[in-house]
Image (cartoon, rainbow, N blue to C red; front, side, top):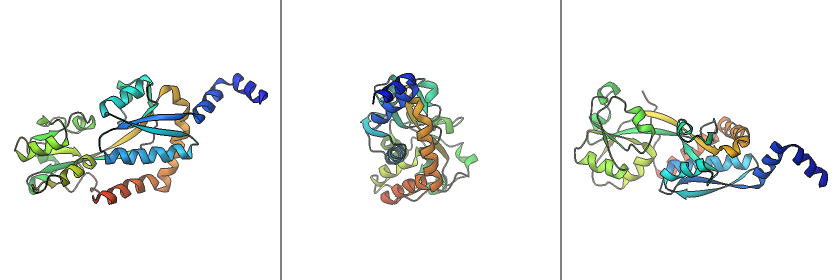
Amino acid sequence: MGAALLVLAAMPGLAQQVQQVQQVLQIGRTDSPSPLSDIAESVVKEAFKRSGLQCEFQRVPLSRSMILANDGSLDGDVMRIADAAKTYTDVVAVPTPVVWADLAIYSMDEKVANLPRAELRHRKVGLTRTILMLPKYSQGMDVTDAKDVRTAFEMLANGRFEVAMLVYLAAEPELARQSPRKFYRGLHAWATEPLYFHLNKKHATLVPRINAALLGMQKEGLVKKIFLDKLAELGIPPLKPAE
């Protein structure tokens, strides 16, 4: 035992990794209902298991989770866009995505929902700017901001804009609550954005191990299976790829 301690003392990097393995990392995720976060949580949990690591998920407001991961109050955040680390400089992304977010187009008019992309770009569009990926895919469009998905559907129904661009797995559960009003969804995704698990930089030595686990899960088709299983659970068909 004494010899092992001497080895760890002589190799501080190894000592840090041993401590991290024994530690239960606290990972932030949104406290709101979110099928996309559920998928990411399942993927990250399995990656930790395969890496010989332990984690617990703490439900906090979406706007706070990355802040807490960045200042070290939490050990990581379950899913964010790749550019998040440019704003939150004390986190590091694990380079293999944990989930992909499809963006979908909704309208009160079925023909409008399925217009070619070039024509949709000239329509008034509503979106929730708090979802950071949405402004990137609506550049140059006439955009109206909505507070959240429910408000976006209300504004769409009231004619405030012609189409809504929303995260598919955030919009579909809300759409089910909008009956008897009829909304139409485009058959193709407008865009698909990869989302990444982020760790506070104090755990940066764990990134290669977790990334290797995620790569293995992808090669086995497990990440896709977790995604499709969640869609089946919700009764939601997968979108066709963006045109």
